[in-house]
Image 1: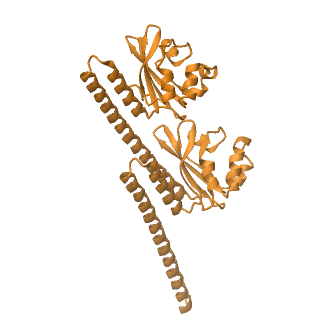
Image 2 (image 1 turned 90 degrees about the vertical axis):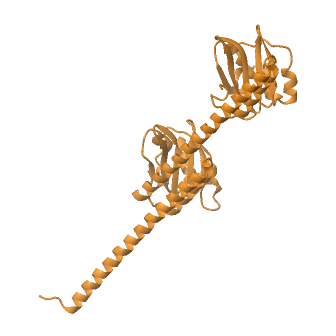
Image 3 (image 1 turned 30 degrees about the horizontal axis):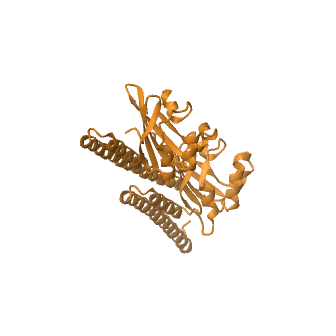
Length: 361
């Protein structure tokens, strides 16, 4: 039976409609792909233009990623081995609570970050309100708080470099609408760019620190050569360079004289504490930093107010805290042929651990 003109026309119109639909889909896919490539290229441009400005890079990554796949909340958090700290966050206007929740997060054995640390590719919760009904009480408060501010669907992707876990990047929606595989893959691409930025910043910092250390060493050697018989300017130069490299508020250099240790140089010490320290040589207690170095330790590093020596009322430790506002303390032993001949110490007025290599140069 031959088709009628009407049926032929209808078939043709349907074919045209199908072709137009396919063309529109192809164009939409092309435009989406171009937008993604453009966003990734913009992030790389920011990384190249601002190699040491991770804040700008992280903000750009979140803005581009969230715009491309319609996310309402999100954060990029770095991991220091114990805690996750928010480096950048985005949320709808009038939602400051999200940034507060993401400010600093401890690792929980039952939490999504722990799952990522144990090797999972990602965490994707389609409906956090359902998760809240299943999780244990430790994580329950966090999940309930996220639901309370309007988050329903949550996606978390790790930041990894080789075997190192550097942090996470998240994307969240205010309605139950899971992310597609394409969107997940795109967030992983942005995570890879964040890792590139972090590695660039790390290498830049290491290069700058190495150069600063070499310069400081050369300057101290110059002082030694120009003052061969006068140790005072040498000690002062050593201490000044060490405090600058360690970003310490102040520091002290002690030299051993028999069973006692004499303060021979100070840098940046508050006047009241300086007067106390420039007294007679002191014999160190067994549990003090110097006493521990006499027992063989080469590095001592702690929060001054948490040390038993301070808590037991040791006058020297009390003076550092009460007269100098000291919190973080690090000291390195000066040894010759294995014997302790002196100590150099650096003090910060906030709780901020020093890098272990800060005084070793």
